[in-house]
Image (cartoon, rainbow, N blue to C red; front, side, top):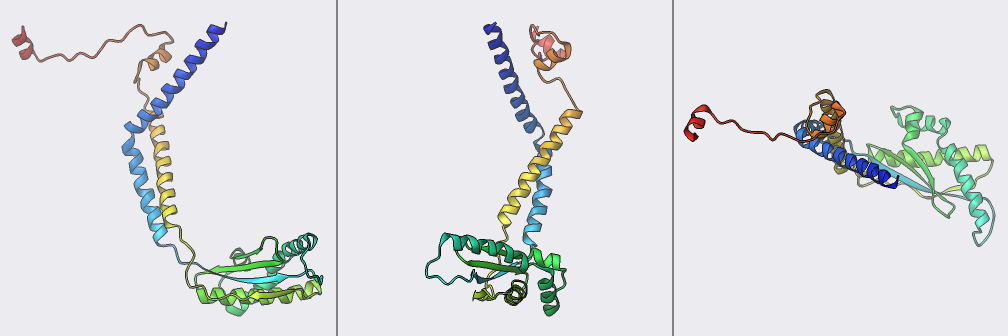
Length: 244
């Protein structure tokens, strides 16, 4: 019984190795298809990477205080301030604030689209929060970020009836754009092209099945193969008579 189990396990391992070899040989046979799929996707990725617009990001730092006057910052105070940060993050992206900013700078985008460009995140283990905004114009990024901060402070005063948010550091005009990641885009496009090419090659192999090895014949006939006849080249009649 144990011997039979080992034989079956060995058989499955051999089948797995054969399948992997079949996959390798399939890639070798259909390398032209794979290359033909990689080339257009790589060209498209290169074109997309080179034509991406520059994006500038400006950020301002705000401080959120719980109103407690203490020399040291206790862990309970930090936890309370972190909860306030989560609440204030939603206030900063409220439709009222976004609509006023859009109206002031004549932005051609909806409040929802503007909200996607805004990021409000806490600075770990502090009372500080970072408010960032990104767009294609560095001067506009600076102006909108500072205006968002001002409108945010006003809104908190109206809603929470407290003034415990203030600006620590105003946004300045960014000097350089965010990384465009052109190399990553090109690499991803090549990988996607290779995957697409491999899929097309597998589809071709599935639609055009051929008997390529003895195991294929065994699967079709359901019997074990006893031997193989090697390929013999037959010479021309003139050469055959000369040799005889």
